[in-house]
Length: 227
Ligand code: URA
Image 1: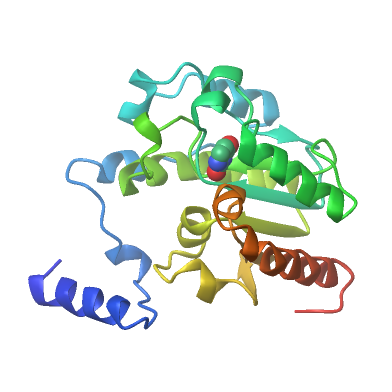
Image 2 (image 1 turned 120 degrees about the vertical axis):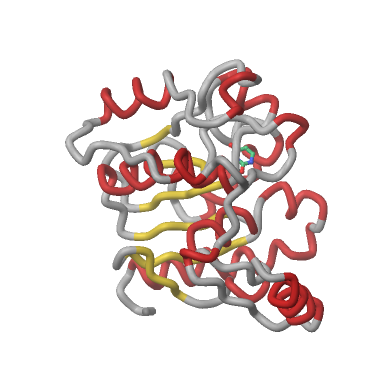
């Protein structure tokens, strides 16, 4: 990317102005374009997909993971929750959202009358980034076909993007969560609502009210009352 274009985006961001970057211009680290372009066969069922994820070596994260974290829940769920990446506890247990943030996610699910096994929960990344750093663009690109296939198989009626990384990755935007929440987006014709990450809500409990509003918006979408 040209230096001046980088500066323009940084400036707009600093001003709080949304910067929309066309998919083909999103930065991919050198040498990673190939990994990002790998696909997953549209014929893969759940078992094949699970096996492909478990054996994945598409990015460097396979070197440091304890195990992959595929996703959990109802394979035909109406609600699909997508987070960022496994943390230490998830890496140990092989299940998404089982740490402190996961407990809060469980409470959020309860609040909308759902449970961990009635929805489907997945992450942008299936492997834990070391030291819980943010996913890198090449890692997200390498992992994306797995998530896309999961979405195809689940066929959810709504997707909840949980937190900044999930929202930005799914919507290919670099707008902050505060701007992406509060409206109904579309991901391949599936309504998508953005909400705060439970880990953020644990640090900023005053924002829980807003995340409740997001869940109410999602419920209205499910009831056919908001689009
Ligand atoms: N945070 C996430 O985004 N996903 C997990 O699975 C755990 C914590």
